[in-house]
Image (cartoon, rainbow, N blue to C red; front, top):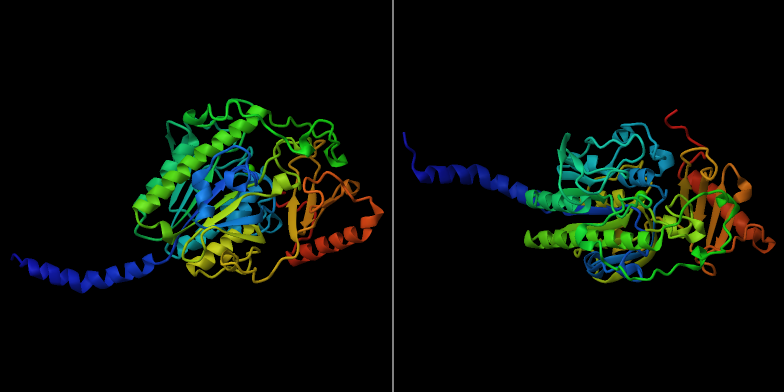
Length: 465
Ligand SMILES: [Ca+2]
């Protein structure tokens, strides 16, 4: 029997319209994209004061949203920083405290994408997460889409990408490939709430070899650009005892230009991501957070890389755009941490924030207020990878707006105290200056208070032994 077309219409209207209504209701939940850049120091963007790089698309996130003026990572090292972002916890709590973690360790973490997936969000991971000799590129729990394009030491050109468990060779530069996958995922999931982590491998260097490449179109940028260095990176600057024997080759001028070029690669991708969100009509219902996983030394204190407690290492850019809550062109001077991202995103989606998370919801800050529980001082921590000379810098640090105290566990005579207001480049260690004895004692008591607050027993936790 052939039924009239009107029957089908009636059938559809009785069942599908309520269903569509439900989907529409779910669609009101905001999307989220967290762009995490490897080794991007605070002043790595035009908007944060880079002397020559042009990052108009990344800057737009802050120009149409908020620039956090005091943003930090709690452990300045790739793997731990990423674990902290994913869990909303300090490394001493989540156990992701060294790059050289056993294979599969990161799969055991309780991450915020797992909670989003459970709450019906489409979740995606694109880029780099784990690092070190046991890096694991295979799919981690909590992601509907897994697209891992590599680890530090992989070539950035023509990567073999783990796509949902399959190894697929790609042509081109990893940054462009990761940006393109992000765009593909957005288009595919535009009609439902999604939570995407775009964690670029750039602007990580590989210390002077051919890995240190921008995409071909940007390789000649800034070729004649002179490089200025901070006073703490000038020849003759005397480093602290903790750094004696720390054999590092500070980045050359050309290394610094290459980092700028790789930043432009990322900016190009952010421009395309913006355009895609606009075309799909979901730009303003998508919170975009842009952050770095740690900073980077351009020769300050004789250093390259990160790992130490100086500002160049722990301070990263943090930009956020979400017009329903955030006034365009706003700034905040509240101290914010990478462990705040997980509870913030959960709060935005209306998903309960687990009490185990140690970061705070930044939504009040994004609206110009203080944190619900204001922080007068910040705790930072780092564990060395080996016991080799120069790698014994096992430290905890406390930072207030004015002071920084660094305590080295194995060599307490290395301790450092800086007045950040008078000495922003941390060139004069006041630890032995009797005039500041009370300040030192106060900072030591703050360290003890914060360790108690965050249930930190100190020591080399030996999570994997
Ligand atoms: Ca890093």
